[in-house]
Image (cartoon, rainbow, N blue to C red):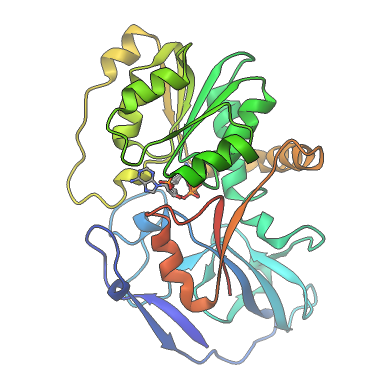
Length: 334
Ligand code: NDP
């Protein structure tokens, strides 16, 4: 088999030399075990954090060990009664990941079958972590009310594109912030955002937010942090809610990022800002999947994906998240 390992811990934006490809041989399949071949592997922004040796909600990748991410695989051989070749599977908690390898062995108890009558990539996007993150961040923390203004950064990405559509479903004005004119057009023309702001090369985000949000901002779903979020903070309304989902603009920082102190704004306008990790909602995933599936069926949520072809593309696809190469979920078709 071929596998991709972490070669070194990156400093700042990872480079090709931080990854290495090796060949390896798998041991013989034992009773109760299943051999799988990854079909689709996910690349996600949080994986950058796992490349550092720091304490977080998930352990770091080990140097010289395969990188791992969520994925959907096909069973190619099985010595467990529950699985047969051809079954489509995902691995389960506590290690819901596939190694970056062209094949892998799992104990049957660590796999679950997935329904392949829906597109398999949905398990990594719309009905997977990004969709659920958008859903719980909005309904549990954002709590948008009809007529309110919802701003989302990283709006054309996997999470953001769902956040904006949930805002519309809930009767709100949806404003997206993303990089580049193509993404802006995608948001307003295909995904029905009421307004979209191109942050790239925009020296006056403050005025851009003011223009797009004439009634201020009631919910700010923050995927990116940094200067973009500083600009939005100035326009938050009384009793605004700020689900802190991600801070991708800071993931490659080599120094502690500093910015304006926003606590005075939070105090004087009674604003709720709350960080969250999607696994906090694990016991409610069923509810989220059911609601998202209903909205998809009713045509209320649409989706787009960026699919890179080939196992060797995995490192580039991961790095592409930090330059915005993707619209919607970034996935590698192995
Ligand atoms: P995306 O599909 O949104 O991909 C990342 C996007 O981020 C890029 O396409 C790019 O879009 C944007 N981006 C990259 N660098 C910057 C930058 N310096 N400044 C502004 N935008 C940037 O990824 P996801 O939807 O999977 O994740 C979005 C966010 O949500 C991430 O921060 C992620 O860590 C977080 N997340 C959090 C979860 C949780 O449990 N809390 C779960 C899942 C995701 P553009 O072209 O517009 O710049």
